[in-house]
Image (tube, rainbow, N blue to C red; front, top):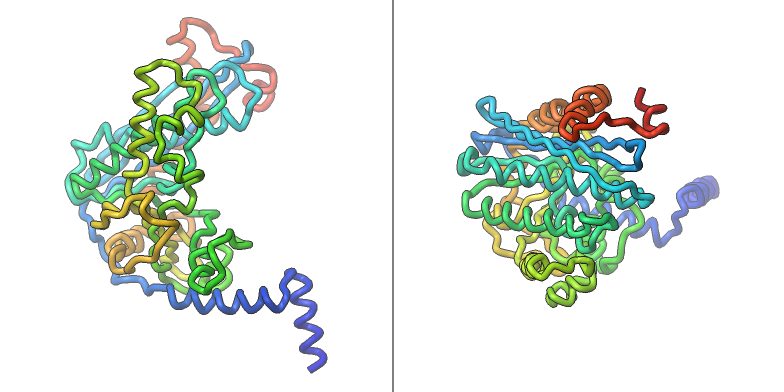
Length: 378
């Protein structure tokens, strides 16, 4: 008995767990088991399937200007293939977090725009897969970015997503975000709330919980409908003019101000996002799946769900079935998304030969990289 107590003390000291934490972990494991769903019968629920991904690269020029190359690709059933390419240049900035945010938002925006621009080529009742989550794209964009002439870029993405959600609802298109890895904590928070612990941020990620207790199993977590969970200052969004002045105060043109205010006013009317994690094969990486509630026949809006609610697993079974059928192994987490990822990926050679030459010809001047770019590029 003394040896057992000693081992227990060593374990708790190693992982920083006291008896209270161990009790919570035991309760969480049981709660996860209660909210774990078996995989449905494998099969393709949607005859037409499309997948979108993007990639980008940036270079610093010798005059301090940074140029960005972003490309998106949409592949689908019947050899469907639609590319999109965009060059952008910004004045040199020392705010590296802002330029990184600019590059990320550009990729996210093009992934939405390529669907909208090709929507007439997509058949009704199809499934459209986007690499990455949908909820964060919409809820993490409530402030302007620190780059002149691009400060309201987050609103461009919000507006594009609002438009896409409406199109998918009208056309009965199943829009699905697939993340091969996610650092969300919302499932753990929801399980803790069920146990009476409130919704404060858990100490570890959902994926850690799944690895510890579900890695050797297959299945998916009971879907969570996400509303205000990650929306900062949610109440203030209901006052769009004031919100614009506070968060997008650099917009001075009256027409642009009206455009921005209208987008913010519509923010609460976007659908809530249904999220769950799934393990399609034992020992595979858990995936996070996002689906607009409107695609599942639910009318719940993002600001109506506070902060999240569990829903019936049966609502997502057709999507789960499709994704399990698409699974091709550890690296090929989704067959079509895997192909589009490999085809859209920007290599350094293409950037520094083909695209550099094309951009130089368009501008009518030779492009010279700064010294640090030359050191690491050539």
